[in-house]
Length: 94
Image 1: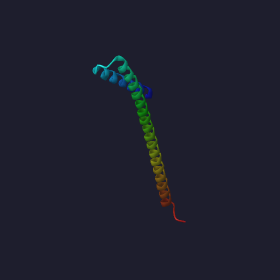
Image 2: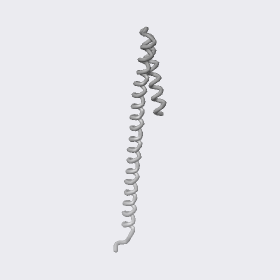
Image 3: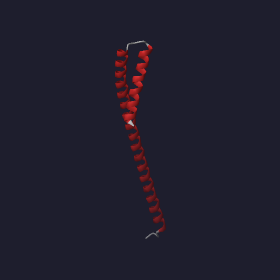
Protein backbone atom coordinates (compact mmCIF):
# COMPACT_ATOMS: atom_id res chain seq x y z
CA UNK A 1 0.00 0.00 0.00
CA UNK A 2 2.82 2.40 0.86
CA UNK A 3 4.58 1.68 -2.43
CA UNK A 4 1.40 2.35 -4.38
CA UNK A 5 0.80 5.71 -2.70
CA UNK A 6 4.46 6.69 -3.16
CA UNK A 7 4.31 5.82 -6.86
CA UNK A 8 1.01 7.60 -7.41
CA UNK A 9 2.20 10.71 -5.58
CA UNK A 10 5.38 10.80 -7.66
CA UNK A 11 3.46 10.33 -10.91
CA UNK A 12 1.02 13.07 -9.90
CA UNK A 13 3.87 15.46 -9.10
CA UNK A 14 5.61 14.68 -12.38
CA UNK A 15 2.41 15.15 -14.43
CA UNK A 16 1.46 18.34 -12.60
CA UNK A 17 4.81 20.03 -13.10
CA UNK A 18 5.10 18.83 -16.70
CA UNK A 19 1.67 20.26 -17.41
CA UNK A 20 2.49 23.56 -15.77
CA UNK A 21 5.85 23.77 -17.53
CA UNK A 22 4.37 23.14 -20.96
CA UNK A 23 1.49 25.50 -20.24
CA UNK A 24 4.00 28.26 -19.51
CA UNK A 25 5.96 27.43 -22.68
CA UNK A 26 9.17 26.55 -20.86
CA UNK A 27 11.88 24.49 -22.48
CA UNK A 28 11.87 20.70 -22.43
CA UNK A 29 15.05 20.49 -20.42
CA UNK A 30 13.87 22.82 -17.67
CA UNK A 31 10.38 21.30 -17.57
CA UNK A 32 11.60 17.71 -17.35
CA UNK A 33 14.21 18.57 -14.72
CA UNK A 34 11.61 20.35 -12.61
CA UNK A 35 9.15 17.48 -13.10
CA UNK A 36 11.73 14.89 -12.01
CA UNK A 37 12.50 16.88 -8.85
CA UNK A 38 8.77 17.30 -8.20
CA UNK A 39 8.22 13.56 -8.65
CA UNK A 40 10.88 12.88 -6.02
CA UNK A 41 9.44 15.46 -3.62
CA UNK A 42 5.83 14.33 -4.08
CA UNK A 43 6.88 10.69 -3.69
CA UNK A 44 8.77 11.39 -0.47
CA UNK A 45 5.87 13.35 1.00
CA UNK A 46 3.40 10.65 -0.08
CA UNK A 47 5.57 7.97 1.50
CA UNK A 48 5.91 9.93 4.75
CA UNK A 49 2.17 10.61 4.89
CA UNK A 50 1.28 6.97 4.24
CA UNK A 51 3.63 5.71 6.95
CA UNK A 52 2.18 8.25 9.39
CA UNK A 53 -1.38 7.25 8.48
CA UNK A 54 -0.67 3.51 8.83
CA UNK A 55 1.08 4.04 12.18
CA UNK A 56 -1.97 5.96 13.41
CA UNK A 57 -4.27 3.15 12.29
CA UNK A 58 -2.17 0.54 14.10
CA UNK A 59 -2.09 2.69 17.22
CA UNK A 60 -5.87 3.14 17.15
CA UNK A 61 -6.37 -0.59 16.67
CA UNK A 62 -4.11 -1.36 19.65
CA UNK A 63 -5.95 1.16 21.83
CA UNK A 64 -9.27 -0.34 20.81
CA UNK A 65 -8.08 -3.87 21.59
CA UNK A 66 -6.76 -2.71 24.98
CA UNK A 67 -10.09 -1.03 25.82
CA UNK A 68 -12.00 -4.17 24.80
CA UNK A 69 -9.75 -6.36 26.95
CA UNK A 70 -10.23 -4.06 29.95
CA UNK A 71 -14.00 -4.09 29.38
CA UNK A 72 -14.04 -7.89 29.29
CA UNK A 73 -11.94 -8.10 32.45
CA UNK A 74 -14.27 -5.72 34.25
CA UNK A 75 -17.33 -7.68 33.11
CA UNK A 76 -15.71 -10.92 34.27
CA UNK A 77 -14.87 -9.41 37.68
CA UNK A 78 -18.44 -8.15 38.08
CA UNK A 79 -19.82 -11.57 37.16
CA UNK A 80 -17.58 -13.22 39.75
CA UNK A 81 -18.66 -10.71 42.39
CA UNK A 82 -22.33 -11.34 41.61
CA UNK A 83 -21.81 -15.11 41.71
CA UNK A 84 -20.01 -14.83 45.06
CA UNK A 85 -22.77 -12.63 46.46
CA UNK A 86 -25.42 -15.09 45.29
CA UNK A 87 -23.51 -17.99 46.84
CA UNK A 88 -23.25 -16.16 50.16
CA UNK A 89 -26.98 -15.41 50.17
CA UNK A 90 -27.86 -19.05 49.49
CA UNK A 91 -25.53 -20.50 52.13
CA UNK A 92 -27.05 -20.66 55.65
CA UNK A 93 -25.20 -18.60 58.24
CA UNK A 94 -22.90 -20.65 60.43
